[in-house]
Length: 248
Image (cartoon, rainbow, N blue to C red):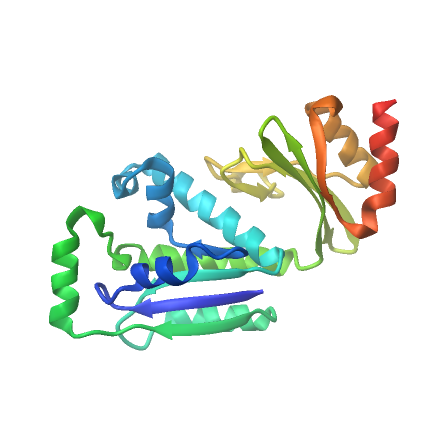
């Protein structure tokens, strides 16, 4: 697990640097809400639409969370032009979880930065607009990681052109199981109280054991439409037994 913060004021080339250095790398997740909105909806105009912005936030959270849980790198674009309490709070939180951190600070002459912004026009979305959101939301991602450090992806299953991922995590002293599909923009664990639920979030059903969770999976997704893609070594025997049981 590693978090790379690419920081600097507007116009210094943070987005361009990230696209050049990280966009094509495997096992790297880029955390930028505006970039995700453009990816999902075709333009930064999506950031002016509350529902679309929420979808971009949810997708960014989900991808960053899963990347960290699977030991990958997350690259965070963050606006700052001086000492920044928010940046150091994120670094401190990440380090407290044993996550390696790196800060790449970009600079250029103020006139040059201004000219770049003006020249880019609608193709540019200033990171200063989402500074507070980036800090708040990414801190939430780190808190979710903290809660789920004891976490395994048991298997990945293909179905109808998509995938289903099946997980085990530790909740208190108990193992819990759940599954998600790549059609979900964002998932979260269901809170204890109804009033804590947020609009637009897909809440995950948890199960007490592997068999119960696998039964629920096959109730929702027919066995003959599923193709095992990858199975965690510790769960191969149990998965094979359950899979063949339902084939029968």
